[in-house]
Length: 277
Ligand SMILES: [Zn+2]
Ligand SMILES: [Zn+2]
View 1 (cartoon, protein in one colour):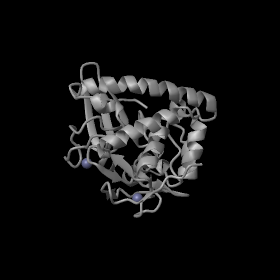
View 2 (cartoon, rainbow, N blue to C red):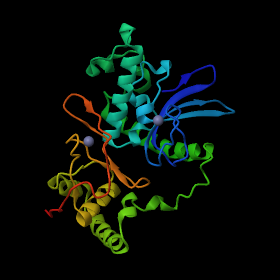
View 3 (cartoon, helix red, strand yellow):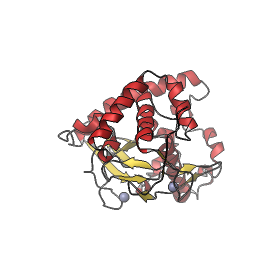
View 4 (cartoon, protein in one colour):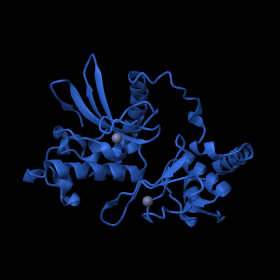
């Protein structure tokens, strides 16, 4: 959703920070590479103002008091738990800051689809196929945008050479890397469905594209399957290669999102041996 403003077009974006250079507008601390980042962007012909925030520090502009998380650009590129987190953050901010006006109350998240203002912009949910197509297209667009954004940020000089290596490789020694690659090759022959049932049998997340599924399985096979977060007992700690820690993104329970953010060192979490099926 883009909203015209005095300064230009305004919109929100969500991303994993492409570098550790940006400073959070709110707490003034650096936003780590790959950390979940929310941004307020004002885009005009001659300049682009970008205000970045840690997801938890995000400041919502009043113009987005009726926005839903799907109006945030690139949100579909985040992992499911992070999408839920962004949704919860947005709704929390909207409740906190704009609850005085009754028509903007979002106390019941199930009723939010009936908000009239955004329907023309994003609600194509009554047609599943169209929805999928749009998502695919916007993903492509997002890739292009990402490149543009990188250039705009002046981050283009940053080395992208590590991009192809899985993030968890920073915890691997040479022989483990070789084993990983071998397993990767073997798993390529399997279908995504087969990979998912392997993950399911080991109580691991089954979301993501084939590459992500394969990397997850290979890591489980070599190091063991990560236990769920002992702190909230529902979240699946996500590895941050820059900080070399696992951070729990929280999780969606039956009715609401549970925030966690607990951080674990590489050896703090239990690893359960992989079971072949
Ligand atoms: Zn911050
Ligand atoms: Zn947790």
